[in-house]
Length: 355
Image (cartoon, rainbow, N blue to C red; front, side, top):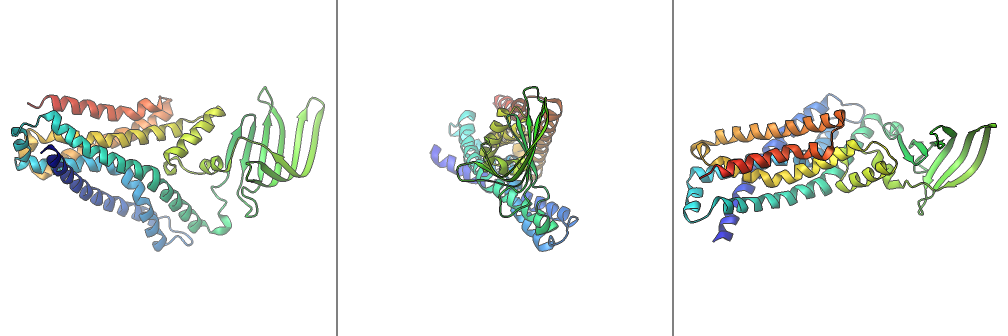
């Protein structure tokens, strides 16, 4: 019997959530499309704007899923409560704890969907959409715009530009620091690349070395260097944190910490993404707590309003704390989990008040 009821509750919540998500994506996609029409340039015209908007939908869906689950669960469970179906379930011997467990199973299923969307589908499509937009707006001749990057490997700081199709990374500037963090040498290679053994191939290298005896210039037509920076790390450094997968974020955070660089921006994005995914489990249980009492006899409009208010408060609090955490140097994990923890406390308090 419990298995049948669990499937029934799951179907109800999933159907309502899917409907809410479609509506939210339609609105978000429309706003995204309208905003992009103001940035049309070159080959980036209406057809490309439509394609860009469609490619961005998985990322938007990942960001909206916690709110969509809350509103969908409120509508679905609210309709069951309005028809006294949940009352019948409780009369049959189901406790609030058992009902919460059944509803939480739906949250676990949605958590798996959210994690797959945020890890495997949304990041590569979002990255492709941004690159397509950049190339369409500025043309192939200017595709180097936005592709220059700075990386560090211990005492060596490198600045790379993608200006050559023959070599993978084009020209590169290298700045070598001494033990006192003073400048020991400056070098420039006209072309650079990484071979299959992760060795750096530098062509037409010219290095200026500074020491106590003066300045020395060294030139080489071909040089091979070994840096602890591979092609994957360089590629990640060119990507916005929102377009990176969780594995990419972890890899780049490890690189930044290894070189004693500021990783707060990427740590905040990683913890924010984990917390947002985990919140999907809380939302259906929170909805169950709210459908009892006055909302049981209220209409769909009242339930929708409650869901929108709570969801909007959660979203705004998450965004505000994430941004302020980077400004005021707060712990990224604490800042990211604080809104979810508050929702969890509210859920427990609301469930305990149910008789």
